[in-house]
Image (cartoon, rainbow, N blue to C red; front, side, top):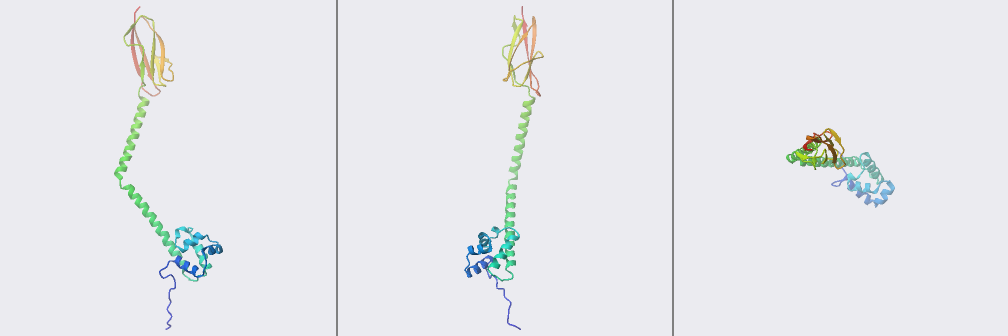
Length: 223
């Protein structure tokens, strides 16, 4: 039986990158020279030697660059490319696991204050409902209406009276069923002709979808 024992000559405790770097330095080749002669960006050569695989291009390009580099350095170890691929794959899987753990941690963090999150959602819904309530109330509520110069149960001796007042802007004003113009601020005025005796004056204001606001003035005309 031969005394020859097959021995793995690769790496010992070094990574693939460290092994490549030692071989380059033994041949007194600088990274700049290697980059120039291989056409590989120097940052990728550094990434290979420092095992910083996340700095290498994704997918098959990392393997192509590595193979080109070891061919340039004339490294003949038959397993070196497969060892590089194993290290590269392990680094990719490690990064994926780190990312996954970060996502899980983030989700866990978000789910921890579930009561607080539900409370905030509830408050937002309540605020929206209150806003909707007051918005609709403003649409359907009767507009403001005030009459300045005529009092109820007033006694006069004239056959006409000037009705002056104010309402909300864009409200429609009518007196005794007749439309009355109002200005942009809601001010209005109209002369109303009266008959002898008791007169009822109906002043109303209404928006498009609102209820009507009605003021009734009773005026006695004495002649």
